[in-house]
Structures are given as C-alpha cells and as structure tokens.
Image (cartoon, rainbow, N blue to C red; front, side):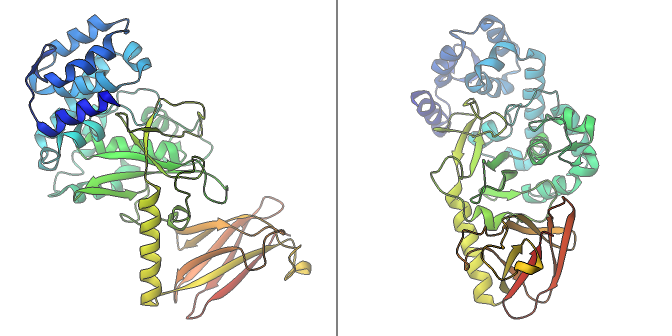
Length: 396
C-alpha cells in the first residue's frame, strides 16, 4: 500500500526530480524499483535495460519493472519487454487519443504486456500492424475502439468455441487454433485495443448469482470513463449478460464483478482457471454494473417499450403446472443472431412465483434455447406483444 501511495503521488504531482535509475524516470520510482530489484536474480540486467531505453520510454519500462509479477521479473524475455514498451510508446506518438490520456491510465491500461496470467507473447508489434489501418480514419478514442472491436474477428480469425485447448489462452495460442472461450476472446480484444493506444482491461465474475457459470468481457476507457463491450461487438454498455450482472453480489468473492489492474489496487482478481492464484491484481466494480442495470431497467419500464417474460422448464407436458415437475436448466435468449439474455429456470423446491424472468422488447420475435434431457439443442420461439408473457419449455 505504501508503494502504491508513493506512485500515485508521483503520477498526480508530475515531475519529482530525476531518478538515479536514469533520466526520464521520476525520482519517486526509486523506492519502487529498489524493492522490486532487491531480490531479483537478474537485477543488473534490468537496470541495464532501463539505462538502454530511449529517454522517452524509460518511465513506461520503470512502471512495468516496478509492478510486474515476480515470476515475470525473473524470467520474462528482456527483448520482449523492450519491444512491448517501444511499441506502446510509438502508439502514443502516433495517436492523438493516446497523447491525451492521463499518464496513470496510459501506464496501467495501455503499456502492460499481459492481461491476466496468459503465456507472454510478442503480440504488440503484430497487432499494431493489423489494427493501425483499421483506425486510420478515426478521429476519437470511441471511434477507434469501435473500429477495432468490429474488425477483431476478421483481423485475427478467432471465433468462440469451448473446444479450445485451455481457458487463459494468449493471442498466439488462440490464433493458432482459430478459437477461444470468452476468457481468451477478452484477452485478444484487450491486446488489440492496447496495440493502437486504446486503454482496455479484462473484466469478469467467478460465477453468476445463480451459479450457472462464469463470464469474462472487456472494458474500454474513453470520454473519461470505463465502458463495457464484448468480442462480438453489439454496442458499448449493452450486453446479453446485463440482467445477470445486475444481480451480482457486491462484496461476495464468488459472485461479484472484478476488473484487472496491472498495479496493486487493494484486491486480487479471481481467476476460475487458477483459483489459488493471487498474482493478478483486481478492483471490484460490482456496484457500477448493478446501478447501470437498474437504471436501464427503470428506463425501459418507464418508456413501456419492454414487457416481463417468464420462462419455466418442466420435465414433461404431463407434469406441467406442478411445482415438483419443474427442472432447473440454463436458458439463453436470442433475437435473431444476437444473444440478449440468459438465466436459469426454477428448481422444484423454489417458490412457484420464483423463476427465470427477463424484460424483452415488444413486437419482436425471440428464441429461448436450451439443452433437453438427451443433450439436444432445443428452441422455443415466441412473438412478444404488448402484455407480459409466460413461456414453457420441456426437457422430454
């Protein structure tokens, strides 16, 4: 905590004298670097790396060395570390939106070489070449972020697929396979955005409120704040998971929402693929998502553009309408090809008034999709009118 306060003072007050680690590094980095290098087996090599960096790139390198996990500090390829910093600084030189960033945002959400605990790839130079043409005509950070988000599938060739080799894939691992789950896709999008100087970070929850699974997505910084998006772009600050995020439990480790931070932020990010790890720093953002969901729900209800729809699952038609005949199952909701929500139906022991409810826009067709008792994909299509609806599915 003391190290964090020192750095925040440094970033808030600007120049604070020259560091003994080299010109271009504020002196307030000295205690941070001293602590980081004190037990590092290759401290001399890292000091030399700092010395050899161009003056304009030294603070970014000092920031990484000060806060990087000990394992990376001891083993990460130094040429890879140098390339990462040089490319990040080159993006800042090129793009007005990156030049306008506060140093604290640039250093923590653009410069980092990794997103979570994925393999450390040499992704930045490659991604700069892939996405620089995509943002060439953009005038603002938001325009550039949207352009990258829309182009990321075509530029990388990676699609969602749970048959991927592992959860926390690096960009190279995902592109080699052409597939990734939501975690790998989020890593890929964060890196694509950072490559062209756009601040981005990884966000997720260990489990939804009803324990039907976890999810990861991306936040982008523009217009002075964080805005969420997903690999398959559907617009900023909108997503199929908002009803679930709106029910996340603030302060509860297993059901809260967290964003990753490169520097310490007073908490750690819960990685479901590495539950014992505390190496990735995090900040809880549950309240912001709960507030955003409630505000949007209230807006929809006030505008009378949406109606509540309840979905109940039964074992068979023979037991429809009975409490004991109900089945707890995961259901996804689509409008055309876009997923607009999801949830879990009520189990037999739950109150008959309890269950999966969702607000859906009037006068549109929706598909409720689930797996039946035989593991077959099953769909129920409904047309939403002006009144609340009840929809039924069967596991038989």
